[in-house]
Length: 265
Image (cartoon, rainbow, N blue to C red; front, side, top):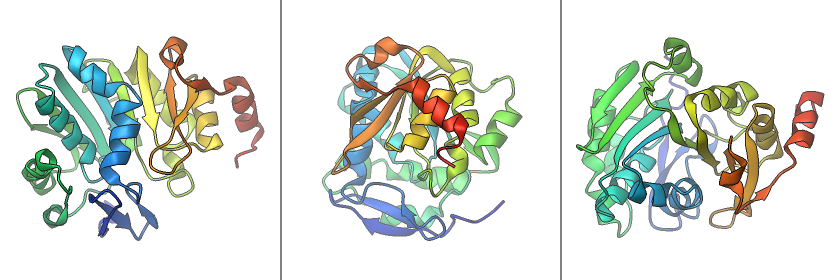
């Protein structure tokens, strides 16, 4: 398997937490103003996942881009802090897992819950093998991590046999469209919609018109939301327009027409 992103470098971010910089993609894994703060805002608070973990009996999450594993630790931290009884199945895809020793340099400022869970990440990156890996993090949280490409995951699981429950929340967190365009296409977003529930939510840090247009072509309803840490906007989407009532919708029809016309090529 390609080692394109296998040698990232640890970098500090503005909220005291660390991220990684990928020389291959020439991009940080997180917002330089704060890795933890950005992830909480984009994937938990804005999407409604924070509240869902408190109110649902069971949730299925799908993350595009496992990266440093930060979102997994944030789910675990939230379950423990809120004393939630929710059971979470956390699916993720990662083509370029990081070296286990990098985890030793991760820091989360005063986030003792995250720091205390780092051993989970070390074990994951030490044990991961190509294909689908299952890690029981706690009785409530199970990680299904696919080591390979996004397309390979869906090709090998054509019947979605490894997604027995429809996905409730999608955490779309790959490198940006200009660095990793193959994960921002209508085909990708069509596959995600097929795996999701009729009222699922997708959230991403990205606010690019091309990404929103690709979502619209795939049939998602799309809206703008306040961005994190200096970013003006981010994007949320759902098959159910009512899930987006609190946000400002984009003109999906117009964006889809522009995408098909080649305006974003």
